[in-house]
Length: 296
Image 1 (cartoon, rainbow, N blue to C red):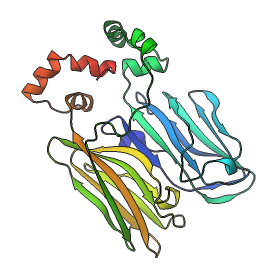
Image 2: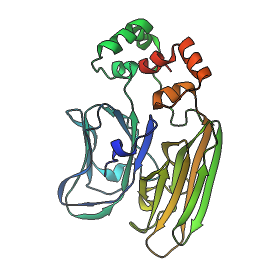
Image 3: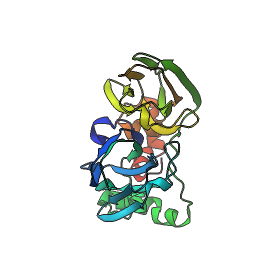
Image 4: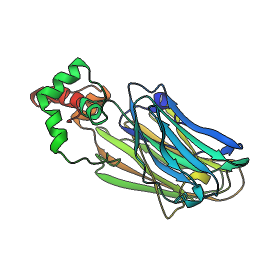
C-alpha cells in the first residue's frame, strides 16, 4: 500500500512508513505504486519482508524495469531488519510481489522519504534544472561541489537535540503518547516498534497538527521490540500516537521522538513567518537562495 504523499507531507523532508499486510493472488501483484507526486522527489528505502519461499519482489522506478529485485523472499532479512536499498524517483515507483499461489495477509513494509526539489538534489539525480536553478548552480559552484564533496545519506534524525521515548502495553484502544510542541521547537517522530500480533489485530495511528491518520500501521508489519523502524514526521503544534485495538489481547508498543529548535532555513523551506530579526539574518546570509539551491 502506498503512502498518500500529497495528503500527508507538511514539513519536508519527511519520511513515512507503509506497514499493511496484503492479500496476494497467484501471479504478479502491485503492492504499492507512487505516481503524481511531482514536483516532489521520493526515495524508497526500509524494505522489509516476512520470509516466505517462492515469492519474488521487484520495483520499477522512473521507467527502469526491475530497478530493485529480490528473486526469493525466503532469503530476505526478515521483518526485524531492512534491506540495503535506496531507490530515488522523480516520476514514478511501482513495487510488485509475484507469488505462485494465493497468500493471505502477507506482511511487509517500506519507507518513503519525500523531498522538495532543490538545484543540488536535481543535479545529483541528473534531472533538468529550471533557468533559476541553473543560475543558482552557477553562482554557488554546485557542479564543482558535487565533484569533490562526499555523498552522505540524508539523516532522518537531523535537527534533533533531545530524545524521548514512550513505551506502553494496552489491551484496549488508547494513547501511546501525546506531545504539545514547545514554542519555537519541533517534535520529530523518529522510531516505532511493537510486539507483533496477528494481522488486523491492532494499528498504530499517527495524527499531527490537525491532520488525522498521517500514518496507520498494522502492528503485524512492524519490527519486534528489540528493533526499530525509522521514520521522520515533524510536528510544530501537537503530535498524537494512538493504538487502535481491533481484537482482544495485550499489545506492547514503543515509539521514540526527538525535540529540536526550528531553524531559519526550515522556516523558509516550510513557508513559515519569520520575525524581523530572522528576516534580517536570512538576507545577510543569503538563506533564501541557499535553501533553493540545497545548501541550507
